[in-house]
Image 1 (cartoon, helix red, strand yellow):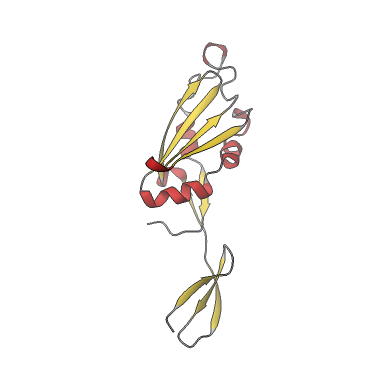
Image 2 (image 1 turned 90 degrees about the horizontal axis):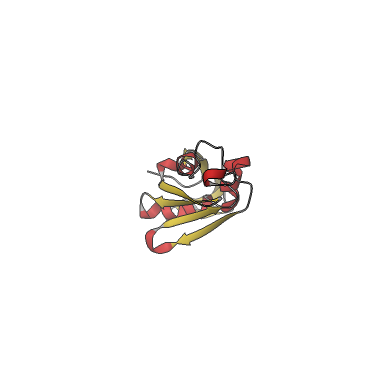
Length: 137
């Protein structure tokens, strides 16, 4: 019997050795900034911010889909985004698009924010810290 790593749940695995004894091991998660696995661009549409997040490598796209949810993006921006956040997947270019509603305090000329066009939202999002279970090289 070869050495096998069998999933028990998302954090624990059973390791079967050649002598068939089972051992439980814990795989540690790692923290990283989104910037390490993605790039991003953002801009405005009235009082909405559109953020495109692109995987740096094809193998990072499944990580983006798993860990970068609309709920996490909304939580990351806190009070800056008053409305809902929608996520759209674009498989062909390994990218996610987030539409943040009510994110510019009125938008354009109405807003008293420094970034009235939402250009800095992508930089802010790229500093989001992710806790992932997979090993990244």
